[in-house]
Amino acid sequence: MRLPVYLDHHASTPPDPRVLVKMREALEVHFGNPASATHAYGWAAASLVEAAREEVARLIGATAREIIFTSGATEANNLALKGFAGARAGAPGHVVTSGFEHEAVREPLAELAARGWRVTVVPAGADGVVDPAAVAAALAADTALVSIMAAQNELGTVQPVREIGALCRARGVVFHTDAAQAAGRVPLDVENDRIDLLSLSGHKLYAPQGVGALYVRRRAPRITLAPLVTGGGQERGLRAGSLNVPGIVALGEACRLARAEMGAEGMRLRELAVRLLALVRERLPGVRLNGHPERRLPGSLSLSFEGIPPRRLLAAVPTLAMSSGAACASGEGEPSPVLLALGLPRELALATVRLALGRGTTAAEVDYAARTLAEAVARLREEGRQLGLDVSPPG
Ligand SMILES: *Cc1c(COP(=O)(O)O)cnc(C)c1O
Image (tube, rainbow, N blue to C red; front, side):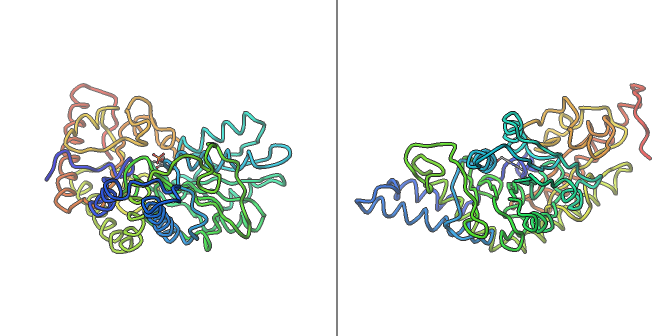
């Protein structure tokens, strides 16, 4: 077993070895610029890019022409939201979003707000799931856009994308979803789910960091965006710059593998997560699973432990690579706003770990993680008691 055990697959997944084979081949052999239309090196690179585009499209039920390659989900979210606003004529409109979006959605929406857009934030329920009825209630006459993520990165909860998509379509509102966590882990279908814009990220589905894609619906309705990066006309003029061919090839292969293996791998990860939680609970009282118990990404757990001193847990388990929440704010300094919004008290939010299992995770690692985590929590509870800290005894 390689230590520390990697349990942070929501922050980044290790590239699949099969993805790396394709990527290396692209780097070594097919190094041409896909825009070079005058020779075979360019043609080869272009055909690899188009094959990858096809695979990304297939994963989400889109057509290849609707896929725009980007540097990741952050850029895809920025292009979707600011590009949508930028292409719209007339006065700023109204946008509806959830209370627990990734910064890569929150900050672009804050920019829109600064430009005069009204932003309505729909809070998630105590189970970490957005209620479609609350989204419906937030829609106004001038609502142009809804942006709600497909799966939440701190809690692992899967959102009712299909219900939200249906009500947006019925009202003629454009629906964007940040699917960085969901794509490749749970089924998504832009037709059945009525999604108009969808962001995904390579390094959340076993391709490397620095590549991603935005799905942009081309018909019924056709979505128009203004580019954020100009100067070369690549990607239908929506994202200029020479293409990251090795990254795109990797993303394509990763999407192909995810589509082929999602069902079986999802079942394996679900079982491992159930086992991990059971093993921890066997050893410890006072373990709280945050977010809906079933509507979850396979292999994803957010656990809080009663009765331990705040901000001590991660340092107490150096052989487990985990985080307390989102990777971008993964210190334990401040309690996660996402957890507080679920109604967790501060001290419980500061005693929370996010365990995200992945393709390489073994049953032996899960057993080790459960034992190590339970021992650390028991030790911290004892320490807290000896220090006379005001920590409630586990109930
Ligand atoms: C990781 C992540 C992002 C950012 O993706 P990058 O490819 O790293 O830019 C955006 N949204 C969510 C939900 C994420 O988990």
